[in-house]
Length: 166
Image (cartoon, rainbow, N blue to C red; front, side):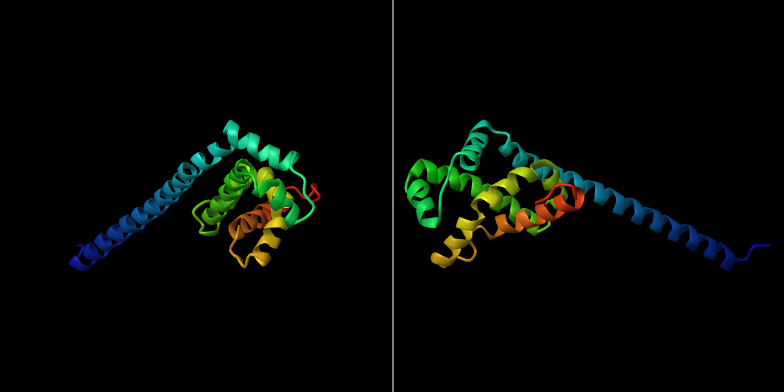
C-alpha cells in the first residue's frame, strides 16, 4: 500500500515541475516581448533615416559640405540658420540613438544592421569639429552619445565585416 508520505512527495514533485515549467515559459515569453519592444521602439527611429528631408540634409552634409577647421565650419555652416538646423537635426538624431544604445534600450547590432553606414560616415566627417567644439566651448558632453554610437557600431561592423578596412 502507498503511504501518505509517498503521495505527498509525488505531489511536491509534480508541483515543483509545474513551477519550473511556468518559470521557463515566463522567461521565454519575456525575452520575446523584450525583443518585440526593442523593434517597436527602433522602427520610428529607423523611419527617420528614410524620410526624404532627413536624407537630403544628411547627404548634403556628407557630400557637399567642406571645411578646414572649426572656425571655417562655424563660419560656413553654423552662422546660417538653415544649415545649422540641418546639422543639428542630423547630429541630434545620432545623439539620441546613441543614448538608447548606451542605456541598453536598443540592441547595438540592430542599429548596425539598419543604419551603420550612415552613423559611421556622419561621425567620420564631423567628429573632428565636434571634438574641437567640446574643447573650445567647454562642453565635454557635446555629442558624446553620437561618438559612443559610432564606436559601438564601428566595433560591430569590423567584427562582422573584417574585409572592410575602416
